[in-house]
Amino acid sequence: ENKEQPPEHYTWTYENSAGTLHIDADADVALPETDTIPMYRLSCTGFTQEQVTGLYDYLFQGRETFRREGESYTKADCEKDIVEAKRQLEEAGQDTSLPEGEREEVIKNYQEYLDDLLAQYDTLPEESQEKKVPVDSTLVDQTSYVATEDGGSREETCPGLTCESDADDVLVVSNAPVDSPGWPAMGYMKKGKYNYAQDIGLPVTLQEADEKKSPDLPYTCAEARALADEVPKSMGIDAELVQTGLVRGYTETETGDGDDTEITDTEDYTAFQFQYARVVDGIPVATTTSGYVSEDETALVWPYEKITVLVSEVGIQEISWDSPVSLDETVANDVPILSFEDAKAVFEELAPLAHEGKIEERSDEEHTVALDVHVNRVRLSLMRVKNDGSKRQGLYVPAWVFYGTEATDWNFQESEPDSDDEPSMEPTPWIVLAVNAVDGTVIDQVEGY
Image 1: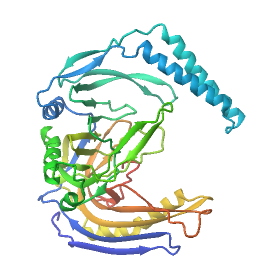
Image 2 (image 1 turned 30 degrees about the vertical axis):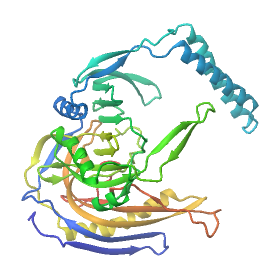
Image 3 (image 1 turned 60 degrees about the horizontal axis):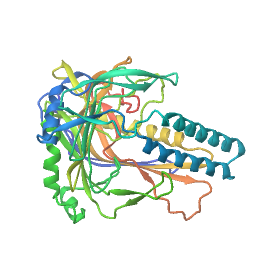
C-alpha cells in the first residue's frame, strides 16, 4: 500500500479571477527509497554531549580552547562612551525634526545613559580583568536571563558551551529547556574577509556554483561541500544536502560619526552556503527557511530544525543549527499512506484558499498584494507536528510536501504606474503546502500542527 507509485511529474495551474493569485506546478514527485514509512515520537531537548564533542573535535582540530571570564570594560572604554553620549545628547537637543514630545523622550534616554556611565566610572578597573580560562567540549550549566510574558525577566539555567580559540573562531551551544521562550541552538563563527547575512543566497547547481563564484574563493563547490558534509557527520547525524547557494559578503567600516558604520557589499559571490535536512531511517525530514511563528503569545515558539553551513576562503566560517530533534520512540513501524492522487486533490483545493488568505492579511488601504507561487518539487517526507501542551514534544508524521517559491508583489496606491519595484521572494527551501499523508489534513507551518 505504501509503495503505490505516484506519477514521476506533476503539472497544474491556477489563476484567480482578480488576477492577484497565480499558482503553478511543474514538479518531479519523489518517494523515499524505503519499504516502510514509520511514525516517530520526538522532542527538542538540545544537543547531546557526544554530538557536541564530535563537532568540537572536527572544528578545532586539537587547538586549545578557552572561555573569557572577568570584567573587560575599563575606565578608558567608559571615557570613550561618555564622550559619545555627550555628543548624542547635544545633537538631540539641537534636533528640530522630531515632535517636541518625542524629542524630550530621546533627550531623557540619552541623559539617563550618560548618568549611568558617570556613576559606573569610579567602579571600573584601569586595565581589563578579563582572563582566558581553558575549556574543552564539556557541556556545563550556564545561567542567563530570559524574557517573561509580563515583560520582565527571569533566570534560566541550562547545559551549554561557549568556547573560542586563538584562530578567531567561537562555538556556542545552548540547550534551552522545553519550557524556555528560546529554543536549543548551536552556532559557530570564524573571522573571515567578509561578513554574511543568513538566508540571503542564490540557489545554484554544483556546476553553476563553480561558474559563478568569486575567482578569489579558493575552493571548488565539491571541495567546500566536502567540508560542510562533515558537520552533521562528525555529530553522528544522518543528513542530506537540500540546497546549495552562493552568497555575497559585506564589510563594515566605522564612519567616525559615533556608532555609525558603512556597509559595503561585494560584487562577487564570495562564499558557498549549504542547507541540510535530517534523514531518519532513510526518510528525509521536511525543511523550510520560514521563520514565521505563531502570534499566540501563550504558544511556545518552536521553529523547524534548520541546518546551514557557510564555507568561505577560511573554510567553514559559519554554522547555524536550530531546534535539533531527538527521537524518543517509534509509534508505528509502517503507517498507511495517502495516495499522491488524494494529496494532489487536497493541494489543488486548499492551496488557493491558503494563499488568498495571505493576500487578504497583507493588503490594506495603502497597498494591495499579488502572489506568484511555483511548485518545483514534491516529496513524501517526514514532517514535525507539535503535541498539544507547552513543551517541545511532537511527532514525525509522513507528509506530501510541495516545495517551491513564493513571490509577493506589493502594489502601493501612491506608486507610479511604471514603477519597477521587484517582488519580494521568500528564501528557499520554501514549503508551499504540506499535506499530512496519514489523515489528509494540511499541516499549518506557523502553528506547527
